[in-house]
Figure 1 (cartoon, rainbow, N blue to C red):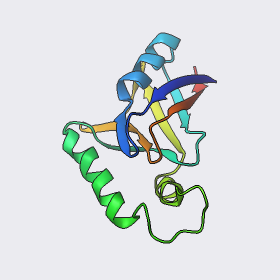
Figure 2: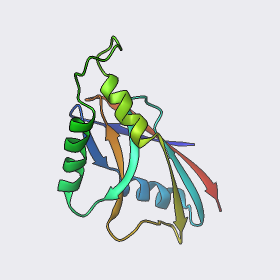
Figure 3: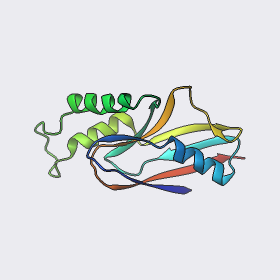
Length: 131
């Protein structure tokens, strides 16, 4: 298993990690197989979405704030229940197909680390299954 370190600077943000993931694949010499990404945090997750226009990530964060507000009478004493809920909606794990040494994404797609309780130092685990 490999690990990437990610530093988030705000409470809620989507950070494109596509280039970091591709660099890992290239550096490790992985060519054909599956790469599983896992976020081992209960207040951060992963998603694939448009990576061509940065306003899409900002819109996703804004929509999540409306769907799951920070303060809404939650019982969790740490005050970050909204982050747990948002993370549950996105999920902690992404499988990625790798072919010819490249992660296979659609034309506009990118991989995002989704922070909902930052700023923090985070980890992203990568497990390779392939040749």
